[in-house]
Image 1: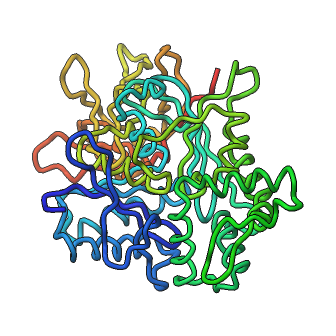
Image 2: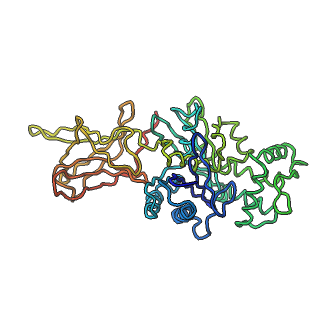
Image 3: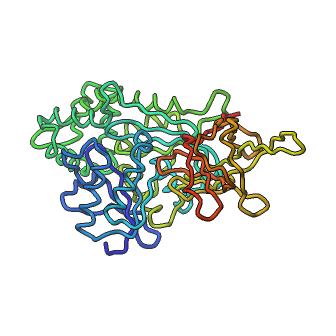
Length: 442
């Protein structure tokens, strides 16, 4: 791999998975680094595990030491940490010298991968379920695809009774082989899994054990060290694992009255587990991942396409935002609306989008002294407004003519921006609004 290259980083519980987009039409490929565990990625040191930003800094530093700095990077973040980690993550890589950094969510990365695939006719406009099932939890989302935007309409997470979803299965397999749940044990487990491409042998053995525990439970599925791990060990671990994934999917499933469930895109390390995919396929239509993409690396692969400019993550807000305005004519107060941002124009970490009227920047005269709440609304494609927030301008708001707009931070939190238009005016004022709303389903 030679510079310039565009890098994606997906930081997990124990490993960091790094990927770059391959040349031509080939699928994105994992980045080979010293100490890699084949099929799993770069082991994180004990000092940074559980600390996403520190782990990101470590993984990025390892890659730069081997290949030099990338031309740009995308950090793929799970929903549970995206809001708190996106800003620090992008700032960390920028401080490390990365010239172009952005953060995207796992669901956006996975859908970017599938939508980019030639012939992926299934990934068009409509609804999709996305599930990233890994060492800690099953992270699910029901997404609405509309043109260039991917809207997370419902999200959920389930980690099972122990709070360690895939990690609990790994620990049980290692214990059955008499091996410790440490880095060396996980290297052996990863090697054993590579000996069973696609998990076919394990899948057949566990299916037989489910129907005939005696003698099916005694069928070897992995060889770890000098001991066999049997189908019975895997079978005993499956019910809580499968229940947790089902629970997370049930929470984001299509609402009652829907004709059918959306298709399911399943990724993460547990997506290699044939007994799990077989169970889910009984209820959902599973979307295939692109040929040559390992489920555990799927999020990093999607991020690599975005980093290389080959795919759009669709993380722009799909609805317009408008604000109620007031003007006084002949002594009477009149209420109107001003569009703050058109549909599809707001992007996490992007520039401020300023309101325009008749093709020119709109100018408003803030009146904080009035103490009058201003209503901000999201406007769907049918033109119907959905109330977002009533805001009151704080003391200290500029009292002259201002441009008004909205900016969305890397963490997905929006702010109303007032920027004075006069020369020598004070710096812009930002009023936090919170995450942008998802209008209710009809």
